[in-house]
Length: 295
Ligand code: GLU
Image 1 (cartoon, helix red, strand yellow):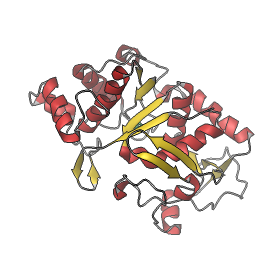
Image 2 (cartoon, rainbow, N blue to C red; image 1 turned 45 degrees about the vertical axis):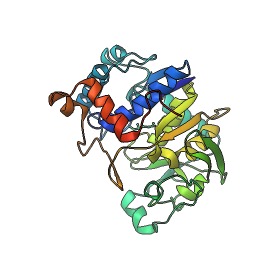
Image 3 (cartoon, helix red, strand yellow; image 1 turned 90 degrees about the vertical axis):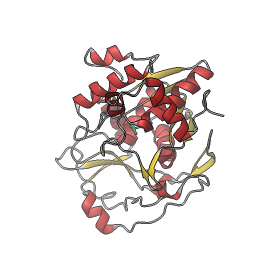
Image 4 (cartoon, helix red, strand yellow; image 1 turned 60 degrees about the vertical axis):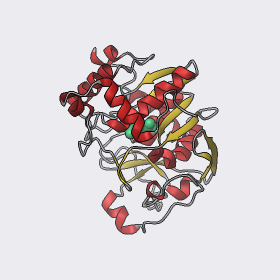
């Protein structure tokens, strides 16, 4: 069993990450598995090196020790589990999709798309998923699908033609799930118009090539799982990982904690004199994370 802790260095580590880490390390330790640390800094516009350093310091202080890619490996420089150091790997995955005739260039901007599209509810039967995480997605309407735009001109994104497949999986916590990615998001963007690889591509490639068997993460990512399973198939993953999506610490009934809003940063709590134990206990109380995690 190999799971992963995969924060994005777009802000300081907050209590939501600590809750996720408790689930990830708890499950790995309970099942004799291992934890891989991955830094998801694929978005060059939002990630900053100082956040990466702070994140590594906070993880160290909290005592979460990865089995694969020690914290010192990230501090030493280039590292195989830092996404910004994996450009060639994502480019190779994109080339394989292109060779299958599945990629096309798209010049639609986000602003253009939101004018064109009506916000509509996605339809899939995630009965235990709070509605707040399932609404407001904008399926791509296929505007550029058949235009045959060149892939290598400036200012175009790359999209994958998704087959209309329905994906079913059993989430260890949320139960049976049925998702039809093409209805949820339409053809998937894998590289944006600024040349950033998207989260959906990099996480799918990394979970596959790094041999991740169990993905344990917050329920806000449940709606992304079907498309990651489907994209995984298209890039050659023989069978998907197991998934477990857990409850989040919310700051209001509809808002999750956010690094970029500076919510409840571990480093602020440290500066205010909190001990490591107090931080962990606060997370356990707020998320009902059991002492030995996962029921
Ligand atoms: N990088 C994502 C985050 O920081 C987590 C992605 C995942 O677990 O799939 O929220």
